[in-house]
Length: 536
Ligand SMILES: [Fe+2]
Ligand SMILES: [Fe+2]
Image (cartoon, rainbow, N blue to C red; front, side):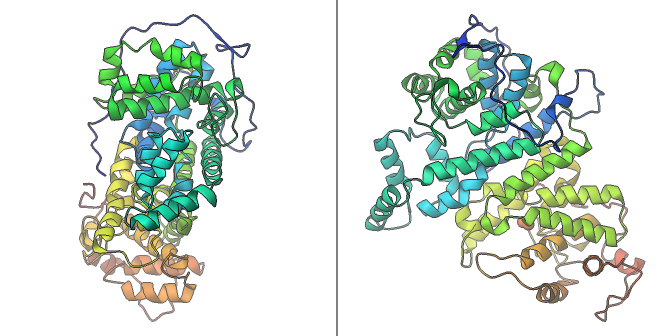
């Protein structure tokens, strides 16, 4: 999978027709506020939405999440920009049906972040089908899975592609009998997980509810609850329609997207929303520019101006934590990996006496260092045995994806290189660039040590978790070739409550000083930024 920063859609500015105000289940769409869902009182509230008056230097949450939505796109096996294009279509529908600013604000974030829970069923899907989760997910969005025939065709086409026909047929049979409830269960997990992460981000209950309702259908044939008609959140109905229209429009063109919407009208989709979709069918500019140029800036303009949410430092921490959850949910073997790496890295930084700013950078870089793994198949991530050279090549792409994703996010761009360098080694034998000691700044070295320490301490598909003593022994062998001695001593100090430079390491190594730091390239005045650019 490759990223192309110039391959994003623009927001069209063509004139728009507006349908007369309509009613949904006796409730005026313009006053509908969605079902009430209790939010986490400790989470920052979207009610703190800022007015349009904010400093030029302020970062909008919309800018951050629209850039990060690319990580969700790759997890879903979707072409880059899927969430943004879905947002453009959904917000156009919102305009046609005259949602209020409050509703449009909630919908805007639901459209961008609808797939927050997408990683939580990847491992299970991969295991059930013995196939690549990214391919499965992409094909699933193009399948009318409420049709028995289409579902069977999907299973027959995608199950265990590497096995012989008899084995594949047997597995399909098993899926149809023993695993009958798995689809609903996986959808429930995905919806709940997505809504939970939206709550962590402090987004409106209406946004959370829309994410929960994404796969519900107008006729009750959807999942996970089988809700019907107006019992489904209006914003969820809009998001569900917008997502399907985007997928078909991108794959086959707008005409096919309209045909699918027509065929699924009153089955999958609210018939009145399908009618609203018709109102911009002939807007050729809208459809022709939907996939043409970078729309990250423009998509932010669709957020109601008087409800713009700013991403202050606290909210940026929340965004990093939320996306770390998405990353860690991808594989059962990394359930708390990102958080663990962030904690270890900050512990080392404290023991080494690094500044608060460096600690903040390390925490965010630690939380997001493996975000590129969202683009790697669970067939590889969860493989119990040794990876083949080809699989290893795929696995090694994840750091490049990390760099490419984080470089899109303005407030995270400064540490994209640090996060992406966590598999580099002092001797130049790491990946994905093959940086050497002189290229690796102190923060990169800390993150690499934290990553190894957490990974060795946790269970993996190919080995059990290791005890602390064994972890430190293995890492001790890597000092000087793989990892930095100063940082390794920082790790020891952080584990035993010490501070580097004020204690003996207890393992016969000298205390470190300026000479060693210079020799290892940390005294170059470029702390925080690797000397060699790590992004592809
Ligand atoms: Fe990694
Ligand atoms: Fe990692």
